[in-house]
Image 1 (cartoon, rainbow, N blue to C red):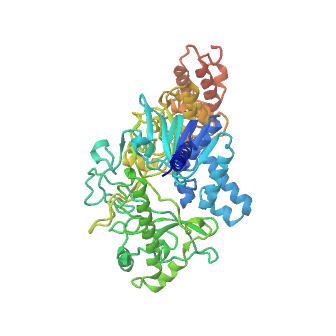
Image 2 (cartoon, rainbow, N blue to C red):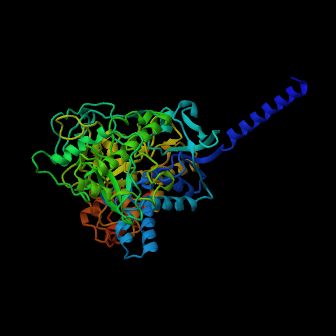
Image 3 (cartoon, rainbow, N blue to C red):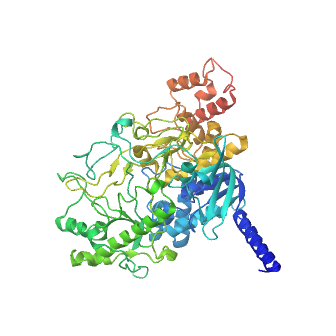
Length: 625
């Protein structure tokens, strides 16, 4: 080769190297807050941080944001409406406004949106996008950015997370992001795991925390634990599925094709169960009866709940031994890489479409049943770029990060009949859903249900700040892979709670940046005041909601024990009793008699005056005889 040719080759190599370095640095950035995961929890964290005046970035692996609500989970899982407020309630309000303004207040769509709690996936995504767009001056959303949960992709300094590396899935470039606070909003807990946070995956034993539903359990649907329920700990996690958006509308109905990897044998037990009328109900027949829409057709295959425009959110049918859940095969998901996860997602897609195809076509089923199932199919108006199929697996449980507080079933169960669960003084949201887990194993002969399935009552509870603060790593908050047992996590894992925890993480991150402290050092009172100012519910009362006069004062002092811990009523417009006033005055810690002004006030007014005085530590007013 000539000297000129050799020189030219070196120049070419140098140019390519320069381009490579440029590609690596193209997406590099430094922000106040970096959030990994465009889930609802991650979106609310970003919006909250941006509203607090901080620069924030959301890094999302997919091309779409919104997590499960934008991927089929349109029937919101919440036990008590009003138990969770803040940005979640804003999301609900925007959903309702969309249907009312688009179709009229008296339209079927407005009715079926159930005050904003039921929605189509495309509408959920649209609402999330609007929330993000309103903060685009401070909030950057970068899609197709993959974080791989390996230690080499994080930088720590003296136990504090300071930088992460992600891969642009389109260009292949590796990008570095620095932040003062990071937030892990992934369903898997990948960032926290890579950073070295302690975590659990699997089920605790019944004895470890005294949880009735812990460990190995066979519970008929609506019944009590049956034979074989040993409570033994294991590494099992609850099943995943896809939340399908189905419709009977011929103009919007896609065709269910036989998937390439169809295995008829997987579904034959469903035909046997339908023929023999076998369900997971208690054997004595005294339990509740299935109430699913069209139980004698598609409702026997999935659990459909109506959402607007003639669609349903089709979840796993708990009354069946076989439905859209695929237990056991997902156990490696929490700690596996994306190559494995993508293979499982494809397997689950084939399984799910295979189930629908079987129900519509297999000769082992009665023809009239097949005909009724053929009336239903995925909606063509959803997921157009993904074959009308959800883009995201319903990851119900990933890593559970061990935090400053470890949430167990006891935190969601009343301490006495008709009372409340324990009240956490440093609550960052109230929430409510049953303790609820899907199966962890496939069907076993002679068992009352699939191992791991349970739904156990709870009451509206408070969630302490410590569940999103990892014990061992600074500069990081974990509002989605939260700290708790398998059973405790089973109620926290609902999207309304995750949205509220994400909002709290965003506000806490902003406070940490302002004070230049680790998130665990953020003063709770400052975080509480910001959350209440933005309409969060930190302790649920049946007779008060965000926006009511003196709401923040009642919330703040109720958490500190100023109100009856077991009452669900704040009675804000009533006069406090003499005993209450005396107790409040003692709690306030000032001698003398209760001032006349306070004695003349309503309960809410009095608590508001006390909170102002407690904050400044000045007397409420001059003491009078």
